[in-house]
Image 1 (cartoon, rainbow, N blue to C red):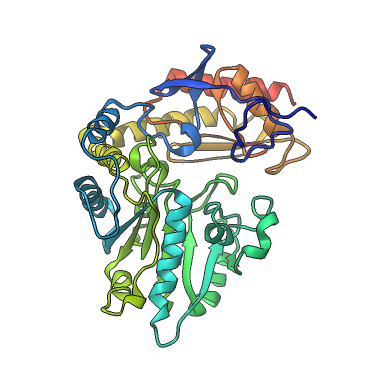
Image 2 (image 1 turned 180 degrees about the vertical axis):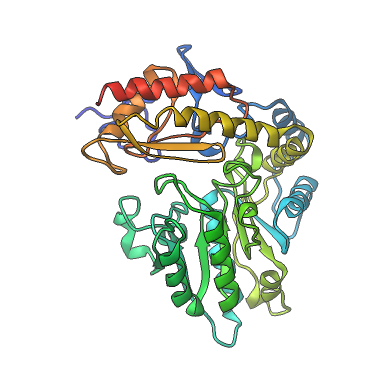
Length: 417
């Protein structure tokens, strides 16, 4: 077997099957370009991170300006203005009650921080709780705690000995009665429930109703169980509102943000918590310190990008772009209603998904790799989850560009069915 020519080990890539990856040389707006000059429409926002488009001028300018002033400083015992501004900006847009911001580097670490905050909160209680509840099909990241909270399966089977036990709720379908009944039974002994609000990403782009999320919050409040909202994917407009929690009218106890936090330009994450959770760690006893950090916590350049992103949400008509994109997505998805090659058509906000009806469905469906190759040949970047094809473009995409995406989906289906 011939190995790859590059020494790079790529994420979520089986190098024995995948072709040599194209070298991306530049990006602008909704488009990428390879070193050979091929243009690709970025229909998945480069793994769900790009919100306003590649190289948004305000974000690029902010990165350049900050690099000329301060590149990095230890964040234990020191602070800087970009971090202060971003923290205040996040509290401003967050649901009521969230009062403190802890920075980290990625969605996975934002979740790790959230889980540790929850356990730290309960440590000093008269009757400490340790159990975590999560949804069936959930995905929360690839570090150990985040993997443990995620569904058991192909993503983490090799690491099972390292994962702690988690109580699992059935995925909410319809009115979510089974889910809510299970939560009612488990919540009294649980430290926290962690959920991806309204949209499960890597679990198959599955959606559920805001009313179900609102009822989850009610049950958690009734039993004193913390609710962790993992909005790493759903935050910054993907589901149609700035935060998915807003559609359910809830305030989580802990909120995880990443991906779109910098508009997708640089890695940065934030975990927001209530005053009560912060107070549980606030003490002259140093043993109650929240023991978590990374070397690049609140990197000034990444925070400058996030500050620029928050300004874009205020100064540009981002909300209207999301409304327009959501409508355009709905219209194009609807054109597949009578196409028997597809099933499970679904949309939430700016995200659509549909399943190609192949004999071997699922994440490891053989169609997945071939579909990705066919899309590339047609100048579209789509990365199916097995036989599930989803479209999650940046908000700057225009209708004619969306047409290219859905034309590519139809053309690729011709190769299979």
